[in-house]
Length: 383
Ligand SMILES: NC(=O)c1ccc[n+]([C@@H]2O[C@H](COP(=O)([O-])OP(=O)(O)OC[C@H]3O[C@@H](n4cnc5c(N)ncnc54)[C@H](OP(=O)(O)O)[C@@H]3O)[C@@H](O)[C@H]2O)c1
Image 1 (cartoon, rainbow, N blue to C red):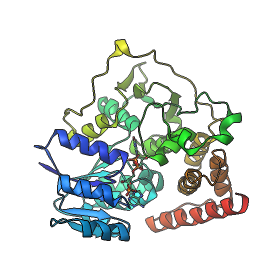
Image 2 (cartoon, helix red, strand yellow):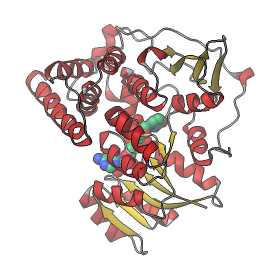
Image 3 (cartoon, protein in one colour):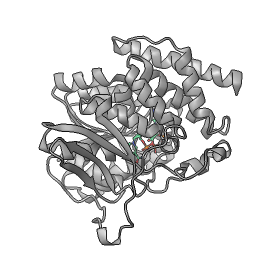
Image 4 (cartoon, rainbow, N blue to C red):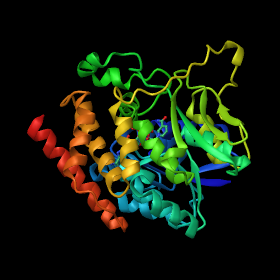
């Protein structure tokens, strides 16, 4: 029996994780659950899973949850509580599925405690990739990607990296693949969140629509698989059936395929190195529409270009880019800026922030905070 600490339990990955847990009550137990403000959903989850701990990062939400719970579940609050529970001796596996840079600290603490980290929070690697990978190695932690593309590469690389030419991350192209750029200005948050293939949280849905999500994934792949930027390619594949591929010198290309459903990736991370039922139906290639592939349009999806540039630049560029993106997406989701403003704000934040190398986690965190302030200022000044 493995005890799971599920961070981001009320989100899209959180819900999919719980549905996989439901299929295997003999193998997995929910030890701790976390969320930020959605205490009403947490009541339901606590009643059903009876974890030892429930953490609401928001203090008022923690109080409301605590008042509503009748059993002896311990309700905690704050990011520090997350950092503590992931290191608890009874935590075996951590599902790191908090959205945004705020999820980095707990994922990193879990790595330091030598746990299995099932990493959905790609921001952890975008912010502190080198530090994170070193920590995993030093403390003998297990890092299993929970992103369909990275899980695909992870699986394909089981045949080794010898003779590897490149990897290719597939991208659906999001809801605006065929929308002319002249219409981008009037895109609404609901339109941006209506992803054609994947059902996800609102922030990552907007990232998919701008293709910043693919940019973050390129950076994630760079750290996870220790590849140079030139070894990472992106191809548009609107059907999201091929999840990614690796290309070898001998002409072989290995790909991982499946229906677009995160439960496959989550079940793989939970059962690795074995496999188990995820609840996802088997892929039927005869009833699958024809598979299409295109080159990405870097002029239309500027965010993808910005991410490649930040990776090539190194230093603090990726952290600054991620911070500015989080702020811009937040304003966009609140109807305060337009869809086209997102890459503009990121670009301006990157130009305003001094380019530098960062040598410690403290410097990373500080850079993240300063970049957020700059992005806020840019939005306030120019709207
Ligand atoms: N969804 C996917 O298919 C998918 C695929 C690959 C990777 N990912 C990655 O997985 C992560 C989660 O994505 P998602 O789509 O599941 O997001 P989501 O549906 O928006 O859920 C986010 C979760 O994080 C919690 N949270 C939000 N702000 C927080 C804060 N300040 N402190 C602590 N917890 C906070 C939320 O709690 P409340 O509900 O209380 O706000 C919720 O439980 C992201 O990093 C995303 O890039 C997602």
